Length: 184
Image (cartoon, rainbow, N blue to C red; front, side, top):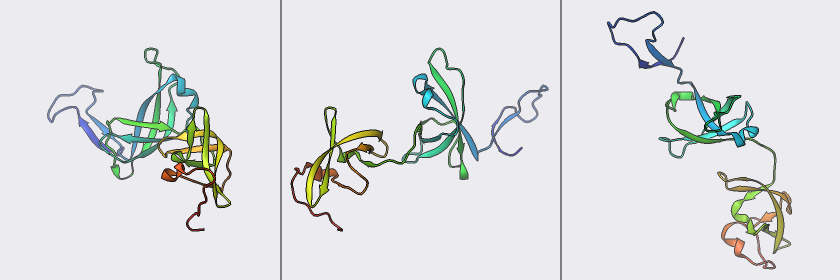
C-alpha cells in the first residue's frame, strides 16, 4: 500500500486492541470529491461525465474530475443525491478535506456560439447585429444553451458559421450603418 499518513490515531507506546485503527493513509495522487446534487437535476447526471470545480483556497484555478458513482437513493431529508467524482491530483496540488463548488457537464455538442454580449434580448425575442455587404443588419436569432462561465450563447437559428457579428460597444450601432471590418 502506498500513500501518505494523514492522521495518526495512537501515540508511541500506547496499548492497542485488535482491529483498532492506528492511522489514516491517503493517496494524494487521486482524490474523491463527494458532492450533493438536487434530485431535480439527477436525471442529467451520468457516470463518466466531466466535472469542473473550484476550491476555496485556490482562487482563479479550475480543477477537473469525472463522475465515478451516483448514489441510487436520495437523502429523504434533503432530497439531495450523493455523487462521487474522481479527481486526478497530479503533483499533489489539491489538499483533501476542502470545500468545492462546481458543475457537471450534462450535455456537449458542436454548436454555433457567440459571446453573450453580442445578443440583444427584448422580452422573449433575441437578435444580433451582423455585417453583410459592408452594412449592419439586425437579425432575429433563436437561442439554445447558455454557458455563463464562458459567457457564450448557442445560436440555433438566424445566423450561420462565418457570419460577422458585432460584439461589445459596437452593438449600439444601428442597422444600415456602413462598416468596414478590420483584417478584411
